[in-house]
Length: 214
Ligand code: ATP
Ligand code: MG
Image (cartoon, rainbow, N blue to C red; front, side, top):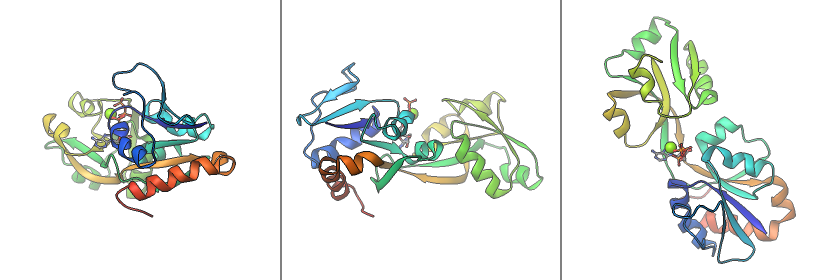
């Protein structure tokens, strides 16, 4: 049995064509099903539906042989025990620093001010500001980061941006690029060795179906 860990929403939607290229068709839609284990047309392949941030953990411990996770999630996880053979070029966005419109981020940085930064991406943020020599106090949040600067919880946020629509709707503006993000295939290292006959053809099919190859 080969187990693939996926999250609902955009990653699942953008993965369906990749699965199809590997001859795998889910028997149910996770958006409408409450099942966490989904069968497929192939008796030897099943899908498990987990939170996006939990995908690397399932694969690291071998509870799933393969998974698809955002690079943002992989940077926070650290990638321990994971083979990362492919950038699938799906769920593309950017990790950015954003502030309230009118807050002069660069002036604050120039003055050496200590900034409060709210984010779900504490590790990526820590590394970014250390590289830039910006002094920050990081506040860990689990969602709705956009609210933090509006109610005085933070001077800035580090969050994912795709169209910028959410920032605009909340009178925030992106001021600094942290990291380009897309989703990657992750593979359990033991599965790659012990289940190679089942796992490698899936990796190869994903590679030729994804928008670019490495
Ligand atoms: P939830 O939204 O359920 O709290 P989540 O934010 O972790 O969980 P998703 O919103 O499905 O899960 O995001 C999954 C992945 O998709 C992220 O880790 C990121 O790589 C990517 N992603 C997130 N937001 C966007 C976006 N606006 N555009 C493109 N890709 C995105
Ligand atoms: Mg989300």
